[in-house]
Image 1 (cartoon, rainbow, N blue to C red):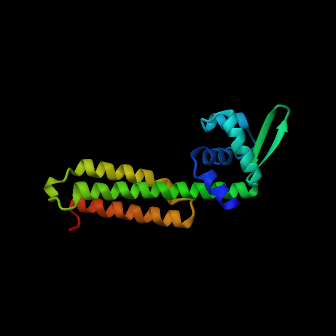
Image 2 (cartoon, rainbow, N blue to C red):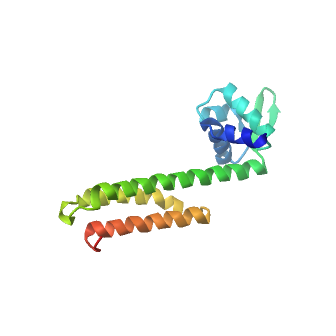
Image 3 (cartoon, rainbow, N blue to C red):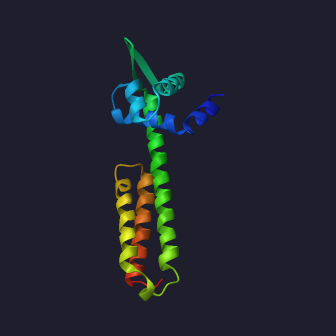
Length: 165
């Protein structure tokens, strides 16, 4: 069944990296270059590319002993979906880090006991990680990133004593 083959293939690290590397290149790429960029052996990359070709996600062209690979329209769309998935996973990691910081360092502590500079510094780090997710991304990613930025601002205000938590 194709669905099982696609899920099995893309729930592995290297095939996803190969598709993303081909997307970033935005032009046909040599299999050898794909293998180098994805820290994979040539043989493994060649097998993955063959599977991607079977699924209609890439087309390849032999130039002598060298094989050029390019994403198809479906491959481009699939790569975009992988990028969105990675963006959402990054948002999840940031949200967990922010809430963990809040629970550990802020919630239930007297304002005088909170290490304000350290907490605000860590919140600023998370804000910087979020900034690239607030523009030129799908609406759902942008909205969730902005919501997380708002949560960081709420925690910052509480740490500074500007609101009662």
